[in-house]
Length: 153
Image 1: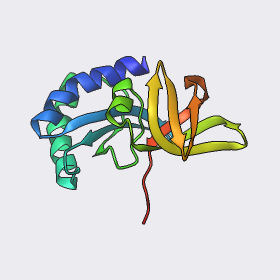
Image 2: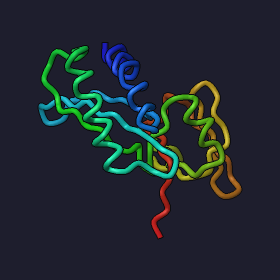
Image 3: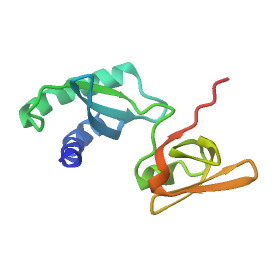
């Protein structure tokens, strides 16, 4: 049910987000501390501004009210996908092939649950990275999360 709901929201939101010059990166509908949140993550060449988020939020609010895809009450938020965005879909991995990523695992492998390296492969959910001279490959079942790595200088 949850994926059908986020698919429906994606379908409703995408044309409005694109009309504002942005792209829709992800949609999540999650419960946190007893409150439901509908979050749209957007992206734009050159970066997303607060104005972009506000414009899209104002534009989508009446659309969501009219279509009413969610019957429960929820908090609606529009935000940037962020520099450390999570990679989820095959297209995300293709787009960022060759980029530095942080791979978080459910269980430690060789004593660590976190690996940082250059994304060098993605096939059937299997993620391959190179860390220095060593290559590592992780099966989809091992992966808790894969995010773009952000260097803090």
